[in-house]
Length: 121
Image (cartoon, rainbow, N blue to C red; front, side):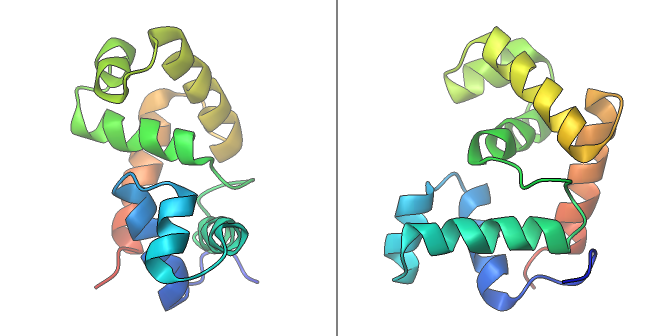
């Protein structure tokens, strides 16, 4: 698999449902597949998109999506997700390491750009 190749249609559907906030088990039920297959599709899609050095977790994706919907401050993201500010900050440490960037702003810009480039049409 080459990085930055387009996700398959199934991988794109899995990513779109994950972006809507569905769990892997909910996605599996919706698409009629095993939840471990859903995890594999999500991971492969992220790798194909060159989005990550390792697949982002569902929680990390949720933090990035919430950051794009809010002002990007940990307190606002935490409130939107029902998590603590410390948990959100810990996710951003992992996200920055995973994406190989130095700042939250760089992570958000990369995530937004790659999500737009590979959004289902």
